[in-house]
Amino acid sequence: MEAPEAMDVQKKLDMSLDDLVKMRKKTPKAPREGSDAGKKRKGEETSVLVARRVYVGNLSYRTTWQDLKDYFKRVGNVVHTDVIRGPGDRSKGCGIVEFETPEDAAAAILKLNETELDGRAIFVREDREDRDLKEALGKGKDEGMDARASKKSRNAPPAGEHVAAIGRRLFVSNLTWDTTWQELKDHFKPAGKVVHTDILMVGERSKGCGIVEFESPQEALRAISTLSNTELKGRQILVREDREDKSVKETGQGNKGTAGRQVVVHGLPFSYTWQDLKDLFSAQGKVLRADIVMDRNGRSKGYGTVLFDKGEDAQRAIEGMDEATLEGRVLGVKLDKFT
Image 1 (cartoon, rainbow, N blue to C red):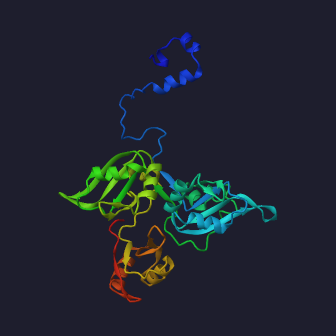
Image 2 (cartoon, one colour; image 1 turned 180 degrees about the vertical axis):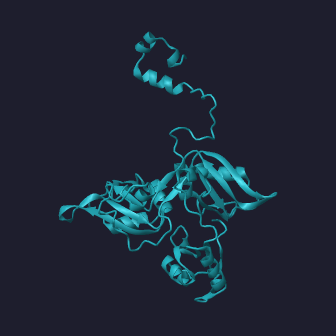
């Protein structure tokens, strides 16, 4: 069949619009001279920004803030919810959910958009009035920021960065030594089109970690939310953004390096919260963020991370807290080698 461009004008006029559209879809597009699949194309999105707050629309008028919190906590640690109300304290059918991390917010967008809550199909997107997101985009607080955005949740943990810049590349750790690039690719294919995988090596030996690159940042976000803490060859893998991703660094939105400033703390009591962890280590220096690692059911795994303002504070924490006893358990404190 002739391509539409090769047909004369009269033939095109005699065809229906549907036939022309079908023909155009079947016509392969010739690659442009000098094109390279690995290079950034004009207009191509190389990273997405996600803050900690999401906007939820099409809520039932009877949905409460507690219903909203209970529904969204399945994807992450919810620190604040609010149903937006109008005159007479009547729900406007929309609300805000704030998570502990931007990665949790991204998971909510990917997993809960167009799902059913109280009999209605809700839609979930980033909160465009989120102060953190506006600041990351370089917009001042006078540019349309409403009263909602000026309120800070009292429950939210302090953080060095409230916005995650997710590119197309992910860092995967806790791999078995014999995991191959092909096995890594096969494991991540359910999240989207994988264009490259690599196992990081020292000589001929695997470092137990690797890189996975997707065609789009949305697919990378999906992988973070659906494949982190899944099992590959008998080990539970950890998935996060690749902080050395050049496409993210070029946007100027890359996360600040935490190398040498973050410690991993093992042996924590299972009842410990991020606030308990922060308070425990505050005597060692200025703590920017503390996190407890949770399982899929929201229970502590007994370890967490603490990010300090300075590297010397992290070293002081290791020297002062490693092998200390806490509620009958011996703590293990060391630098986080994956930052």
